[in-house]
Length: 281
Image (cartoon, rainbow, N blue to C red; front, side, top):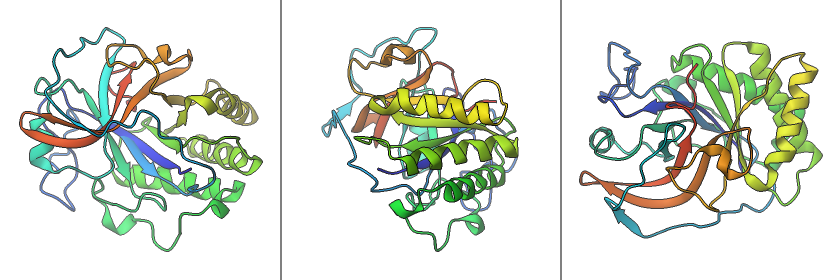
């Protein structure tokens, strides 16, 4: 099991724009957010708590699949890949060269050590390790602070959704329940961004209820934005609630597939969202 924070999903159906300058030339000095900068991902500290479930892992390459499903009005295809693929590859995939409208943006954390998406190198996580012993109320609060701090440093706009990734568990221990509830409450208490949860379908109902309680304890209305993963019945022309939960705003349905668009290949997970940018304020 591992967790990640995900805070910003770039929109990629327009020209290639990103927003910061400190690490790579890919970051536009004008800090123009019209392009990609609309969501985020950051892997956190709850790895190896239980067996990871990776179903329907497709390993063969796909080159411009045909026919491409036509997304409906409530279907916005996107993808995530944990390591930044490079400027040329990302530019090659800009819609309509690929069917994807958005991509996840990973922040570094104990369970996601790669910093390639990030631009504020001085803010990267240091000595904290990825361990099940970190799954506590106190660590949930600490990681919530870290998530909002990194998201703000990356200059995402107020109201951006930050997703906490909670991978599949055969059962949800009390320590994990305490961890994610504390994380959600810290993001709420900070007030700059909104909490989101990435969760396997098998655990979605229970964690949705836990998050609802976390909101109630804070006297907050609504609930987090949910990104549910399940391979069963997935297609990018479906709406996320067809995963089986009305509260699902994003559905991830294909894992670890290499696709080639416009001559550029990336190993990705494939998603569909109910909105053009799953982290937009």
